[in-house]
Amino acid sequence: EEVRMLALGISSWVAVDPERAERWFRQALESEDAQTRLLVSDEAVQLAFYSALARVDGRRARELALARASDSPQGAGALARSAATLEGLERLLGATTGAARVEVMDEFCRRNLEVASDWLEVHGEPGSHDELVALVAEWKLLEDPVAGADWYMRQRVARGFRARRLAEIAQRWGESDVESASQWLARQPDTPARDLAEAELALLLATDHRDWRGGFTWVAQVANPATKIEVLQGIFAEGWDWQGGAPEPQMEAAAVEAGFSLELLEFLRRQQATE
Image (tube, rainbow, N blue to C red; front, side):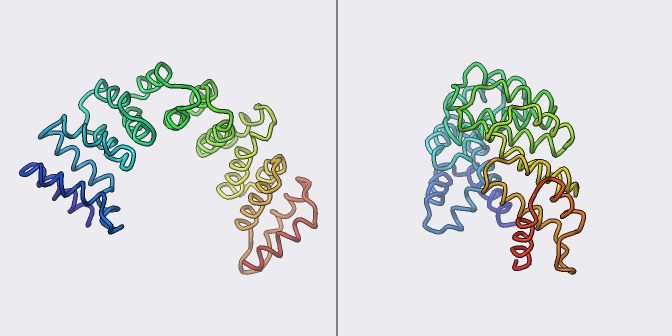
């Protein structure tokens, strides 16, 4: 309610006295009061302010949003949502960097995903645009997981980003079709970069589908010991019978079938019992 009232108020204020409204807005963004900064940084408030300012003075709205883009990227996003054309969004993409550019690209994808991805493939810089690639991929995976995964895997990203890429595909695709996502991941090279994706599928199968066998089969393939233990703990927490104070028998049987030792299961039992 407070956010809604502030958004309405700032929009009306800009319409009648843009200079004073802008001055207050700037001061609020730099306020020592954390609650004030949080309120004025809210997406709805940012959109109301920049949309109103753009109607009064489009050039000033653009200058202010870009000047504050590094510490308040929501302004660039609000400006993007008030842009009338795709050409205007392209100009904003060319004028922003970092989190502000991600905000603009999100609006571009919402309006026209194909044009947005075409722009990225032409203007993106491999290794420095990984967050933009991930954002476009997220939209594509929601629209068509098969085509989205294929597009994401074709993009050049930094080596350290590749594990995240696999994990995001597994997660997004798995949310709509976990069987197809599992089959896709099984066809990828079995390297440590698969660990996060295997963990995502293991937890998804166990927590959302209560498929203990599928979950433990995937976690057994995780190479990193710390990641493996963390995922096992998550599965055990899901399959713990809090009234009986013990894991569900089917879950423990699936763990044994997947090759986990009785000693490890006992360790997880004791750990869960103390939670």
